[in-house]
Figure 1 (cartoon, rainbow, N blue to C red):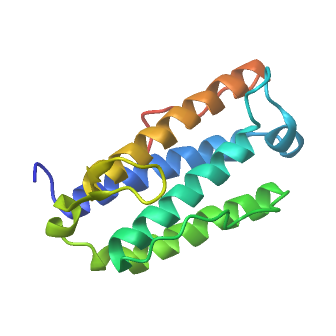
Figure 2 (tube, one colour):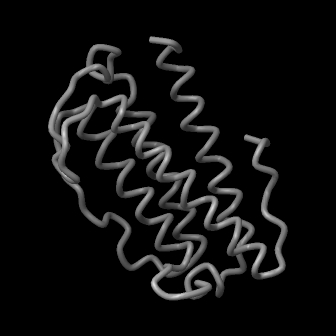
Length: 154
């Protein structure tokens, strides 16, 4: 590995802290309703996707229990969406010690999206998905006249 497990985890955590700061910058009403054009979704829907993917992948890699479900369906307030982010963080803290470097190197068929890849690649793809959606959130904020958080502050 080029980095340790804890260094990789810090990259994931740092990205999540920035995503949470992006979420916090949204006015409550716009978080759940604003999208600039069809078929784009409100930022809240993107956050829910990020959380569901992370939960499913970390749980699957750590416990070999693969289940992808909308865990936070029905959330309609910023406060509850932030609670969901913290709940996922607690799950990751609980499950991460069960993941070994060997487990991250394991190549398996993706039970949710198809194709074979290593578990490291799976987590890397989830990270890229989060970065992509956070970038959309930055654009949404700018369209709303709100300065997004500094991306280099993790």
